[in-house]
Image: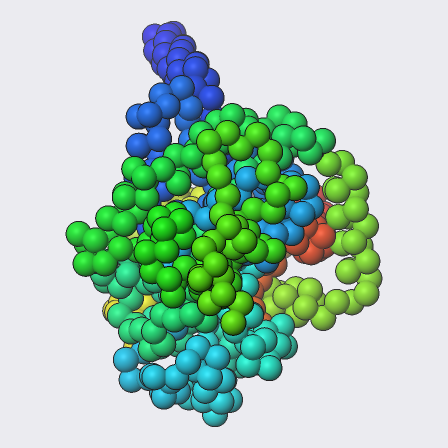
Length: 341
Length: 229
């Protein structure tokens, strides 16, 4: 018995010392908390970026909290994160104008698609997104189709609600109908449910490919990418001047945002997933916007994700260092004319 | 921050007393799903427990020990197993049970089976040995004897059923993984709280939390009262 107590004591001491040592090594690094969306996190992109970032800045430990965009922003507003990396321009604008965020940079984009079973019971192939939704609703009311919604206030959910609104429907009323399944979960979980129930859902291209190639789902893309389904990711630093956010690590945040828009990371973005999916999951946005490499897409992004004609309104810029912000006003006259006509 | 909590609680109370239909439909669904689960679990647990409590056979100790060991079955593991069994490509996929309330009930019934079996077996065993023998020697059939014993152990059986219900009612893993937390279908108190926190609907979460705690508390009080009797 005495021997046992001795062994237990030694074990407890060893574990305690181990935990203490581990805690100390972690605390040598400063922790940067990035509040981000499930669609970015679940593809594994952030792990790649994290490794690269910590190679460059060994004294900073970047950690990611992945939530729906709605909560990701709430988390940052509550002072529990140093920056956000999200995809919902309207909410981003509110975050900036509420005095919570500064120095917004558009980092990447891809597209949403509507995915559904191969049989396509609602016959939506070839329709534009809004009409496709209406067709799914009509088929759903006949008991022939199911729509699965994220229902978690994420960026994807916002996009879905906006598409319903564009079709003259109110998503908050639809949620009580029998063909409308409100999942209340992340993208992968929602896709898995749509797959099980042979339903349709709105999904970003990155998450779709990620789950399709891994064999989690066998749903097909029934409505292709286009202007109406553009999905733009932006990074915003928390404003250290905000009385509730004084403790944020603004310097590290700015390092991370500069890192995200650097050529190096933009190249990583362009390559990420190409080996596995034979196309990138996200497209880099910086060069596209700065140099008009693809004027059509650039004009879509400006139209959809710029706030008052700029990436970041002038009054919401603060100690931006090397960062510069794009403005429609600064574009060559020819392109500007095209936008306004 | 503290004001946020206070605000949340006030809003929660308003929601509770305004008889918000969304909240109450979730509450009733939770009660129904766990109630059905309890009925199913009782259906097979009581006979198992009576046999375990009244008879001696080889391996009985091992079976009892196994049920005791699964008293603390992690709900997520059970959820995972059931998910793999019930999904479309799984062995029971043809029944289309995944993401239905019935699937949650089945999962919860399995979850509470060890509780019911262990508690009821103990209750049966604690019935006076002489009474058990008496029942048998009076020439009654096995079923009559079992019924007589169960009648003596009623307190213990009810205790077991309440404890089992409580476990099912408060669990999250099974409901989340095989129910899928679909609004208006499989959203229960526990899964709704988990979701509303993710949606930053703090007041709604608090309201649901108050109800969940309230029901669990009342049940525990009843349990305690019965135990003392």
